[in-house]
Length: 125
Image (tube, rainbow, N blue to C red):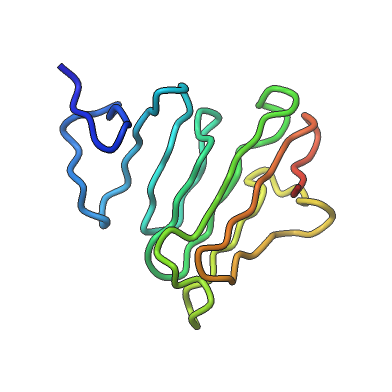
């Protein structure tokens, strides 16, 4: 039997709820939600990445390796992104630009950014 928490089904029921662990859960729509407390290389399965903790860099996967129109959402779940040293930086792991910039920054408490791929680049929308 899979463990459930707040409408989500854990992909790995052995993971605990401590914020110092990276873990993924699969919600009822088949979207992968990943909570991170340190820098993280997103996978092509990730769709929602929630950040809690200090300075975090999220590296989006190579846009050429995801399907056309693939969306990913990155947000500040802790509400500390505006504090010094708690900004969340999002970059393209393949070295490409995101909407013309080398990276995008979330610096608003509880802020978030949604990204999509055209199979060549990532864009913010």
